[in-house]
Length: 203
Image 1 (cartoon, rainbow, N blue to C red):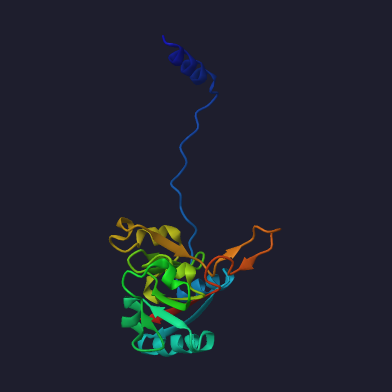
Image 2 (image 1 turned 45 degrees about the vertical axis):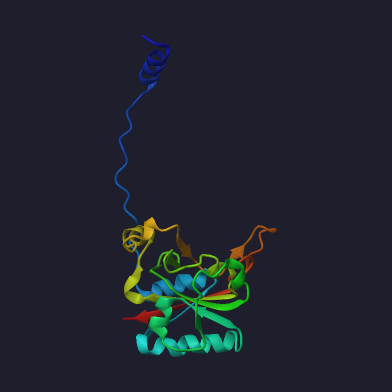
């Protein structure tokens, strides 16, 4: 018998009783509606508007942009442009280098899903391109279809869009950027978007 086998044999003989394997994990049952999701968005420091019908969403986002940045640079993804139509926004330039996005006042992107458990919005890497945009912008608007709000992160991972994990990243964004490193004081907008608004859309 090798030293390894002898040590393992002693360990096995010292065990007083066998421990049964735990039962499969059952996550808590949570609501998966837009109202529950909106409450958690607010708890994370953001705001949720709506839900709106698709035809009304453009006016709501236009009001936000005019309030935040009457003459500033506003960029919207291709998916957001299809959803909102024309407004005070421009398409994201193709292959824009990150440093060219430093002056973006408002970025508008489409979230793949919303998580009612924590108010997070899942951003597919194909939508959040370039990735620097939603970090460098002053304010971030995320459009989320209410039918894609799920109760918790377990359901979120089960509902990821096809091919999402083949992308360089899939990011969950919960509220504006924040830090509490300095003396435990929570500071919003420390290293990213200062404000985040999620706009719910009924499709």
